[in-house]
Image 1 (spheres, rainbow, N blue to C red):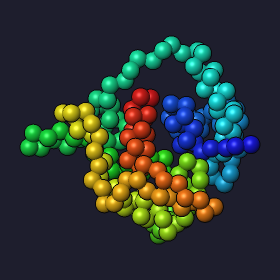
Image 2: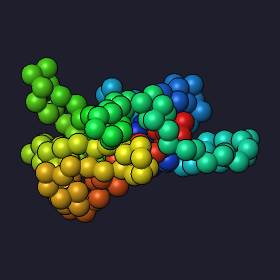
Image 3: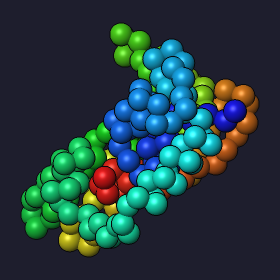
Length: 178
């Protein structure tokens, strides 16, 4: 039985994390609580998404407006002819799930349901300093402290290369369409 996190499920289903949690609580998807988190069966989620697709009309394309981006957590900045929406909590949109001790230190982290070694999460978080949407040209940008192409070492010892900036942008677009 393959399972995924609420963040991954929300991205796959194109709904909010709150909707996924609601589906878990009321049995719309097969899921089990593991500690404080939901583990959602991928087959059940796929079935639920198929049911939603059958019932809904074809969605109109969503335009990324400043109002929509601010509504999902962006912060608008306008100065010297520049108009930008900054995302200070960009890690949430990338699907990084980080739990912390009361002291603020990392207790555990995962990306896509796979655990990340605590020693690596600091480098991941430090790799991108700022993410913003330029209202004038309609594009996303990031100040990078390192490469956005990161080799992530998961707890099981595997190494995967991910494009962190692409994950952030995809997460913001998904959140803005809901």
